[in-house]
Amino acid sequence: MDVLAPLMIPENADVDTYIYVQGGHFLPKVKPYVPKLKAAKGGELLKMGTKFRDRYYIQGLIGRGGYGQIYYGIDTRSYEEIAIKTEPTRRRGCSSRRMFLEQRVLYRLQGRPHVPTMLASGHTEKINFIMMQLLSVNVGDLKKQSPVKRLSRTTTARIILQGVAALRDVHSAGFLHRDVKPANMCFGITQFSRHVLKLVDYGLVRRYKNADGTIRKPRTRPGFRGTLRYVSVRVHDRMEQCPADDLVSMVYSGVECLLVDLPWKLYPSDEYRRSKLEFQSSDSPYLALTGVEYCEFSRAVFSLNLGEEPDYGALQALLTEMVGDKLMTDAYDWEENYRECIETSPCNDANFAINMF
Ligand SMILES: Nc1ncnc2c1ncn2[C@@H]1O[C@H](COP(=O)(O)OP(=O)(O)OP(=O)(O)O)[C@@H](O)[C@H]1O
Image 1: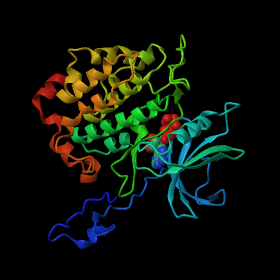
Image 2: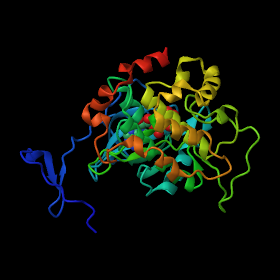
Image 3: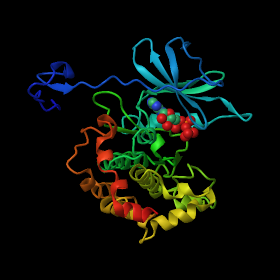
């Protein structure tokens, strides 16, 4: 079946800005994606300019996480650009198991639209590695690149809508992500994937359902897993995590995109729990700043019944008005020089200033 609606090239348009796809269809050309690379500062697990496994040419370093490093490479057989996630096989004298888990979970989730494609995985004497499809700069960095350090309502709503869909897929496979945050959300980089959100980093995943679909017995005091700024109050209280906790982190991620920072960022970390509780209270002025629709969505997530499967569709429906007349395939803020967030900056609004200070 032909899935592309014919696109009329606008009159007077520069024909060079369109590409011919198939049977009379044209699509706007997209600038090729060039990843921002970090300078080497020693301790790299792969050497730049060398060929890994006699096949993958290492072009540079995309990022350093708490556990490993992500490299930009070229597959010299297919000429495809790829991302290579690496971690040392041994950490503090023990063998690292994080990437084995991530590889197993990624394998199980292949084919889901919001999960990066895994191309290969394995280990050498020194490193464990996963080769993945190359993705864009993460949403946290896209927000930092905005001149007003925030994203527009329509872009944020579309990110969170897709984020909820991503969590539905992870949860329905019986897993919790446990590290939802803007830095773990990227977009595709091709003509067809550049508006598709991908959830990355499955290193903290935990299975919460048994093979028969029943919920695993909760532990009395599980260890802390997640990123302190984004975890729910229940995680501060060391309760066993459930799908609602991933969704709370998704809510906080959206709040950060909309309001520059999360309110607790101003406090020392031992005040985060109190500040999160205050934020979730019914008269929170800070939550009100996110707007009626996002407020309603957040409240629906905060009041989820922990024993029940969340109704992901109903949660998404609460955000549809916030998307306005934008399509999921329309340009996002970074594709139009952050025009919409500059024009709608709440800093120009007197009420915003009164509520903030
Ligand atoms: N496939 C990919 N393509 C491009 N960039 C990626 C890809 N996967 C991850 N990244 C980038 O690398 C960063 C770190 O990735 P990831 O979170 O998987 O590593 P990590 O070592 O587990 O990090 P942390 O310990 O901080 O959670 C991400 O924030 C993202 O910007």
